[in-house]
Length: 125
Image (cartoon, rainbow, N blue to C red; front, side, top):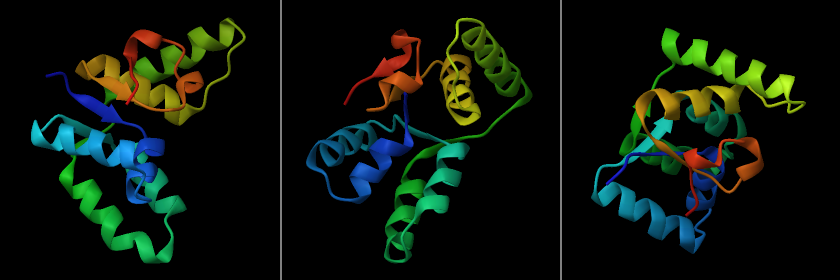
């Protein structure tokens, strides 16, 4: 089974008890294919409610964490530049998440499909 980089929106849905996200994450954990970008860890801590800390940390610890390397940072900058020349402005975080998926051969699980113009990268839960 292919490794899946779980975007922050799916994580939030899981933490808020939304059924599709629970079933989706359980299937990834059963096969040890759940990955989380270190940037999603940042986003989770930035938006976390006080009563969500333990559950958030448990979720993070259940995933394989992908860090940002020089190769990923370079690829992320390239993706930003390529999309910008097409008139599409993406956030730095989304470019780096996409670059992480490309460099490491992952799919991206997200509901925010507009954040990732390369639809071949996506795995819709």
